[in-house]
Length: 503
Image (cartoon, rainbow, N blue to C red):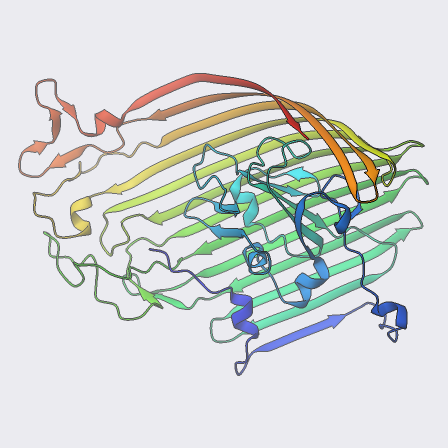
């Protein structure tokens, strides 16, 4: 079982000796508070694809501003859930889990999340994209509860999380802060720099580095972990082409390396007992800051995102175009038997690429009849490879039957899962203000999607019975146990179309 870790930033800044925190601001001094500053500030959100006051949005929305995130020291997206009710975000063994009101899709690699994640209007359907430290230099995070299928798409059964990063301004400003905790060797460095390049062109750079030597001891390998080495950078450009046309460009890159990840077995009936070969699969350990696994668990993720947004103010509406590429490469190594003996070692290699284009036309808002129309296209490619590098369940604990093990010298074959998808949609939503306190709305979305799949699983490692030789499920035809799970499904295709309405 993986030990749940306390968010390290809160631990580092809690009242402890020898913790050093440095912060320096490059912005101008704050003027004296005036009487008008004491008035409640209106919270502006884009939950309906337009800027609106939070009180005017006919959806259950929890909004957290970027300033609030900085003030309370949130550095991880999971920590946002501490301040938003009915929302759960946690790192699963395969990919992060996102749930709203108990609705989510879990960690199945073939599923997109049932809670749609959108960053600056770009759909981030794969769970690993939620591992990016999105709480850095944000304008706000909006959590929309309940189905959002009309404006945000079909994968929003539980709701949607709408993240807006801080865009460049035409003032020079910046921020630098650093945190160091000697106890675990934890380091966090942040840099934000905003600068105008000309009267109508500005740039903003945000960078974060996170490092840690670790707080957990692996007694089997005499290693300390988790050993964290994360680097994330975002470059944003803003070009006011003219009074009516604005271009925003963003590029993000992240390298996230965590090795020697903590694994702790809280309870075992076989603690301290030898297996058939005389090894101790589960040594007696009396501390949650220690464990004993023979294979160092690691997660290595590289992410890239590029997006170009054009906003064109017309006389009757605003035309918005969002063109984006996003993708990641993931390598995950795991000791799946959680023991100090080589029972089951697995490796996951996952790659994902997504191209998307959205165009929408939005009325000015605040009128008797407000409307939105738009179209969306997305193409995505997912390649997943899983390999059982070691297979010998008998070594994981004392068994009452002769042990089963892999054939010596056999070469493991990966299980392949490749999926290509193409989807497009058109949507429209209108709201009629009957009175100051009553609105009537209607929305329609038509969506078509095609997925192609190849799924191949071979005889990864021959199963050997050390007494009787090879273990057969049917001695008459010499079919082994692993042959039963071998299969090859190639060229599978599924297409769906759906008209969704909202009133």
